[in-house]
Image 1 (cartoon, rainbow, N blue to C red):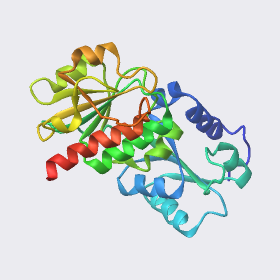
Image 2 (image 1 turned 180 degrees about the horizontal axis):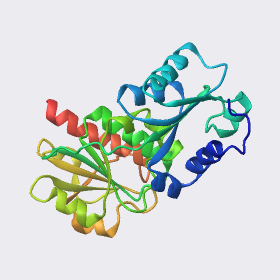
Image 3 (image 1 turned 60 degrees about the vertical axis):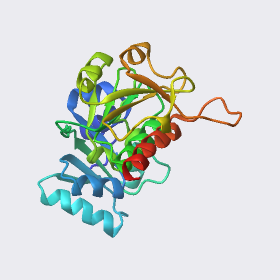
Length: 257
């Protein structure tokens, strides 16, 4: 049992929670909660360490047992120590350090999403969750985008990280990937073609820009066309996650109509 907040394992977890550089250096990230760790276990992701408390639910104990059976170290900690580590107000009593994996992209993708300089963790997590449900085959993240493996993004993603290929790439790399395969369409507040006038049954890569300034000049230059969501009301713009959901499910609608 670990009882000290100064224990090296606890200090390492704190570093993973708070610092992107530590997550990238170690190739690991922190996942909290029964459901998310159940998803990680079912998807075959490996853990380095699992922490549990004595008040963990029976479902949580089964998740911990699943990791233990695969050779993972499972340590008990006092509830107050878990609470000091947790990113939620009411911790569920289980937290794990998970090794990152790079899920493969399809050789000839037909439906990609590009997230360009998005900085809000909740928005990115929601977008990843929506992308998984819409059948997106991979998400490409440009420099300046919030770390997809930060705790808030992982929590908002609701397990999407364990089943959706994620890649970091610049505008030139994204353009090269799409060239001759998928049309690169940048979402704008206005200007370009309304989304339902595009033939989205063909291979596409949809670009969602950042909350403040939209897509970067580099992505705009690389794009094959601009696409926008007509808004007859008086709002200036949509939340990035909402706009992304509308765009992605227009692809779904067209391909299933």
